[in-house]
Amino acid sequence: MDSFDEVDVSRAILDAYHAKFAKVLRSDVVVVGAGPSGLVAGWKLAQVGRRVCILEKRLSPGGGIWGGSLGMNEIALEKEALDILDEMGVAHQVHGRLFTADAMQLSAALILQALRAGATILNLMMAEDLCVRSQRVTGVVANRSLIGDQLPVDPIVFSAKAVIDATGHEAVLAKCLQRRGLLRDSPDRLPGEGPMDAPAGERFVVDRVAELYPGLWMTGMSVSASLGGPRMGAIFGGMLLSGKKVAASVEQALAKLGPEAQGR
Ligand code: 48F
Image (cartoon, rainbow, N blue to C red; front, side, top):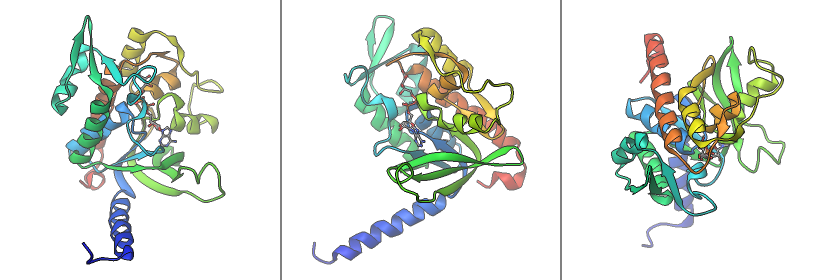
């Protein structure tokens, strides 16, 4: 255990991180936000061979799953989402018309599924803007969390053929386009979420998954925040299914691109 010194430790980390970072500077898909919808989207796209980078501003991926409701670390979900749990080997319990799962198990499983499928997760990385070229989103501008919002330090760019806004209630990327007047037919500001209506909210985040602007898709609560859907809470089936649906939609769009854009 004494065949190394401290600089060996630093160098190993630096080299490994550099390789990981360099690999995703040009990705097929950049997912911003590692909550339930973003992690499912990243997992499913990596599973079909796409180079996927997931940017998460917090230290821990998992978004709103960890705390369940009121910090009670259980989440509820509907039967339609059970297949996704089964695929990951996450246990569930029956509670009347609903099901529950352990929030720790679900968060950990989603993170591991995404990583094992080949996605790269960069935590402490905060998306602050988008690259737009010829009226298409071509990448994400990001900075270190706790640098980007506090110090005058320039960001870095991750390019992508498709970007997914999975930033939850904040709908960060949709707002980037909105404040520049790039969203056609939209009012001065995004409508934000409507009042709580859990069943309608769950349907909304799945039904209304869409490409908001060429190259930019939305999933999870950012769908509601961008399009004025109802809020809902501590029920997660819609988030998982929304992530799965956006992955299918992005994959379909990427498959239509020319062969040089495929680059798997
Ligand atoms: O909030 P979050 O879990 O979004 P979601 O996938 O799921 C919503 C549910 O958790 C819950 C709900 C269901 O009943 O209503 O709220 O739609 O995950 C969003 C992730 O995005 C990260 C944030 O830290 C969280 O982990 N995030 C937000 N803004 C940025 C970001 C940003 N600018 N850059 C990188 N990550």
